[in-house]
Image 1 (tube, rainbow, N blue to C red):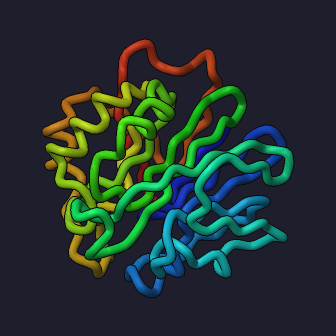
Image 2: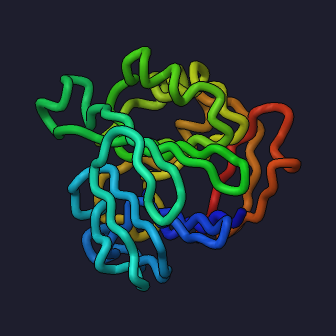
Length: 212
């Protein structure tokens, strides 16, 4: 399986002869370059411009926006989990769908703009997910201390921070460093993309930092 970060919350996940892209942005709204990727499936956690610009992705793709429950697209099984974009049950920013799926035997959960710890039913469903992609920029999502409590409950093998401030980003997000101080996992700087197999999953939790 290959994982490529296209900035913000947008990842390209290539496996099993299929490419899944998550939360595409258009670049302009954020002040960074748009993703250059082609996909079979585009997963969008909520309908905000920096997460739902599927038109920027090439290819004949199936677009999935905030879909909860189990579904199959292109022969791959996915599950969406209803959560909130804020700590007030969506009053301020609405809903958010986390997606979980398996690629080359590795389970992945993309949290989108998670604003509060999900209910116990969702936590049970995503428990022990291999790779957990979490927002780390705090301003529009959970603060770092609370996010780390969520991560520790999930017990993933790999945590991938996203949705944080990088050079050029024009929205007021925090950098990733405060999040890393709370998390205190060994950090691996993996570059722009990473290849991994199920046999290579770490025995103890790690945090992967992508560059772009």
